[in-house]
Length: 567
Image 1 (cartoon, rainbow, N blue to C red):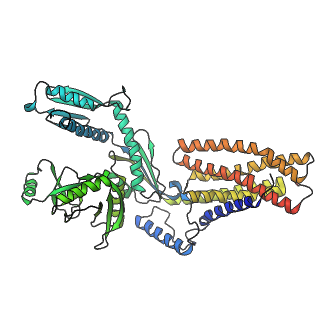
Image 2: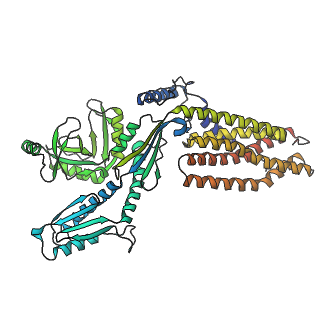
Image 3: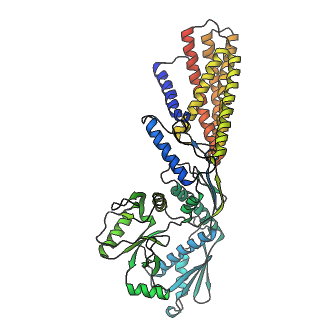
């Protein structure tokens, strides 16, 4: 128990060294690096951009590149930022689902491989889909055939045979079929929309996955989003206000057709009149999409090769590349429109077949606009419209006060614990204090290295860990004291103390770790922050208390060879 071969010593030393290097950047403030700190109130977007640029330059010029440079990520309550409460529009979810059903109905009634074609037209109004059959093309069996084919589309909500159906389908009069979603289907689709929204929101706000973005569900149709360090809620709302419906469609350039459409205000069947977002030009765009957002493999901000202005570059997947290359081969000289949410972002002319699937959108973009547009395209379409119910901008001033208060409380707690341990257990208590300092360093290093987020409850978790960290040492030292009273030598007393206290230490910390894991899995926001620091603190506490303190004690016993043990 007190034997430490060379490989163990190297492993312990390496762990302490790596933890120290990970935690080291947190000791240096921005002012130490020559960066002007942000104002206490909410900074503007430009101020934040200037601050981040100056900080990155200072880190690059001062901090050695081969050493870890990540600091602990601070949560919204410590760093400030934007808080948004969003509600998924239930009516939009229902309307979208009925439009999908209408598309399926048109497909099955078209007669492709299922029998004769049945003519009619459908329309979605609010929460109702009405499909009207063509009176002139009906006979006595047409309604029955149409109802049979539509009923085949009415699958169970949960996909289980015999379960509740998705749609209520009924006949109205002699020519109309009316379709509604069942209540069970409405609830299921809204819940699915909430799950999809969480993923899309995260990808739009944090496409690279490097920021502390954690959208969480609330109820059945709400989402809470916290964006630490973001001073501009309007930018975040702008990113989330767009549906993200991307299509590539052909353009009709015939001047007479465009003039007639503008004059009458009515586009030809299968076309729609849209406006170019950059030039304001009005153009006729086909309702049939060559490719859409689902065919985009990746998107990112880049630069136009001709004038080096910001642009959006994206690449189509295999299916999209095939469709796009076929269209460009057969439509030489024509234009196609890249349409995002009914706005023409670009309308280039096809001068040659395009086989690679690489597409570029140029325009009068700023760098940030190009980055945001790439994030929207890459994340894909939102399942439904988001309504913003609550919006708050949290300044960093309160967070700075919390950090100072937490640091002060940690130092005072550490000092009181150190006085108690040294006064009660003498030299062994001093060794325990050294391992406690190592424990705090390892916690900071782990938070920095793992990219975990420190919140105000997380600071409370660290302070709690300081108290818990000495608990294992107290158990060991009391065992050692008992062995000493029984007449054992210092070495055997220490060895027996560690051996007999091990099971108790493991039992206590494993149960606490399980509680922290449950808090992390079931909790959200501040509760997760507390659970993370508590779990990390438990692991580092066991390591420092049972390994580091024992190593220091064993080294002292081997070198000093004391005759008695003052404890």
